[in-house]
Image (spheres, rainbow, N blue to C red):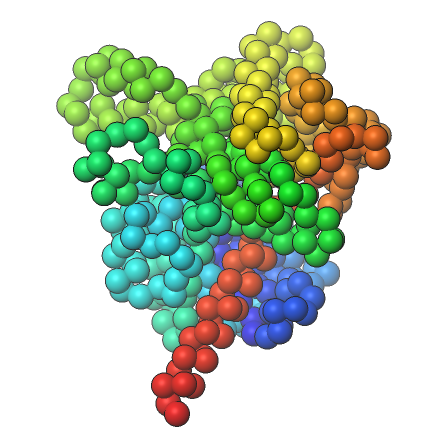
Length: 409
């Protein structure tokens, strides 16, 4: 079976085609094509494509807005030179309160996703627009949605419940947890390795950042909450704030209520975090370079960021009664050794001993960066969200086929 996976971000669309074996115990899916359209809505848009051993990059492509970007991706994957596919799977950040498992997309599911866009306004509206466009172009095949929240369904009620009146909880106001597909892929890789730690913290650090506490490979807590805006400090997102501060910001707005809410939402999601603290664009590599050159604002930004991650990992250590492993994933987690060093520096009570040569080396696959003397193992593990989506789509498609066969008997 060949599956197209579409993974959209706030300014990018990643797309891959996998050949997935029918047997779940077989090797990983084979990547037939891998592509990314980045810089949507900017002057630095680029389309990168890799098919087999052939790679190409086009700069300043027509991606002035999301509609143009979607059409470009649709035309790209429809080309005769591209592998064919039998189903499409989409990463959707937030399914809302009704959908608690990965789903084949029906009109009813699409309506639920429309209703859920208020839960993740940074991600879901674009994902729904992409789904509609792809379903219109490829109406003859099945489409499936995979959600970042499903992995966190194992979180206990004490971790998901907000201290608010019951009427809000009935409307789906709770802590959902995010980056679940990333966490699930890391657990899968460690299980294949035969080295799944009992008590583990996964630090997924990229443009969005979250820390997940796991016990025997199951999520028991996550730093994000109702939306992906909460938790630790992120690239342009504020992370957790005093609720009174949000009320202060709303009172500070001199506009109509709807305009005020939009302004505060933009502030917290697009104009806060590391970028706001440093006064620089959201590029941790550039901010790190400025900090190393003595820029005080960049230095403070990175200190606040790493401090928030350290506090989250430390709190989960207390929650789990200790940590057997810490895993770094995501663009920052995998590729910024100084961030890892700063985060771990104040966790020495865990008996962490880092091999600096491994920590500084480029991360390729699963990399243990702690020494054999370290009481807590530390890993760099690449997130494989798209691969997990392909596997879930394979499983859902096979289940549909099996159910259809039983019904026809």
